[in-house]
Amino acid sequence: MVTITNHMPTAELQALDAAHHVHPFSANNALGQEGARVITRAKGVWLTDSEGEEILDGMAGLWCVNIGYGREELAEVAARQIRELPYYNTFFKTTHVPAIALAQKLAELAPGDLNHVFFSSGGSDANDTNIRLVRTYWQNKGQPDKNIIISRKNAYHGSSVASSALGGMAGMHAQSGMIPNIHHINQPNWWAEGGDMAPAEFGLARARELEEAILELGQDRVAAFIAEPVQGAGGVIVAPDTYWPEIQRICDKYGILLIADEVICGFGRTGNWFGSQTLGIRPHIMTVAKGMSSGYVPIGASIICDEVAEVIGMDEFNHGYTYSGHPVAAAVALENLRILEEEKIIDHVREVAAPYLKQKWEGLLDHPLVGEAKIVGMMGSIALTPHKASRAKFASEAGTVGYICRERCFKNNVIMRHVGDRMIISPPLVITPAEIDEMFVRIRKSLDEAYAEIQKRDLLKSAA
Ligand code: PLP
Image (cartoon, rainbow, N blue to C red; front, side, top):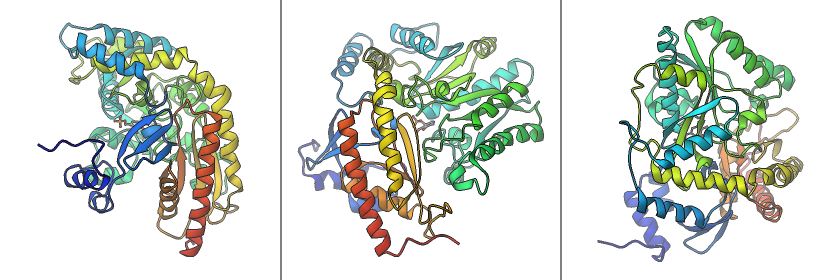
């Protein structure tokens, strides 16, 4: 058997990777030709690759490494838990201390009466749980036809067949189809879709699409509305201020359940424990994952309010995962929450990191490519445009310019992502002002290089 280690030459690792490893969300043949970058270790906000390059992680992995890389405490807790009780399930009249302690802690941190926790292994399966939760809730209340869930176009709620149908990504729908009784309304993306409306007016119009959908589908048919407080993978779309109060009013008026997908927004990303608190939302159910363990181990959950939990509990809930409440994952997540709390990392976000990041982020508006700069806490996006005043799109295929910018960042050792022609960041919450300065030196250099390339390739043209 070949022993594969960090010490092997990069080309050999890349060849083995290309031969055997199918990467998510990738064109694998092309990636195999190019060779994936091999990340070997990480500390704080820094990644190191197999060539010894130091890379500033502006995305916290996949928006998840909130406390930063390399925290020994989590490794120790994992090792201790594996020795003591590596696995046991919570299906048949059994429980264990890590699951009890994490559920109690989440209930303490979550707002309002969100006091009950159903564990999963990540965000996709937590949203699958939510579909079953809300449908079971209305069934148990004697309204089995109240089973339609309203979601938003361009939302990301996961990659399983059900959670991707719940999400609003057209490419994913095309690949695996839909499940019954999911309905999508438009997203509150003023930059791309606001036309001549002022942002406030547009925010109200987009929120009122929820009311129109409820009236059209029938109040007796609509079970729930699901949304991320700030749409993440859709391109960090921050709704106008008028949007969420109106959504909340509509959910209250028609008595439909509100599910906040906090997989990205949770655990400090927006400057509070949860994005719902930042945006003034009162959900009946929250989906959490990612920052709950800072990505050190896979874990997710649905956090459920008193009334929904009470109704679900009336009968057998036919749902569960082998790894629901996995003791090692739960113990690591609990330690991560202890660090977030005791080291006052969310205070650091609110008082230090987020205000400084906002200042630097909005400073990018002076760049010729940047038309809009949006940021909430530690998640931000810029819209790239050939013409700022008209909010024009590029004539090239959507994402061409975003990809050029993303590649320049990658080469300059700062990780950013592009979603179409938007660039996004979401760094570890522990990033310092000096690291933010360094990040922006690299981002500006990358945008300048991208601009030169775009001009050279004659891509600075507006769509008709
Ligand atoms: N919900 C949101 C808002 C997400 O951003 C993601 C992942 O990025 C998910 C759900 C799916 O989570 P997972 O990849 O852990 O299944």
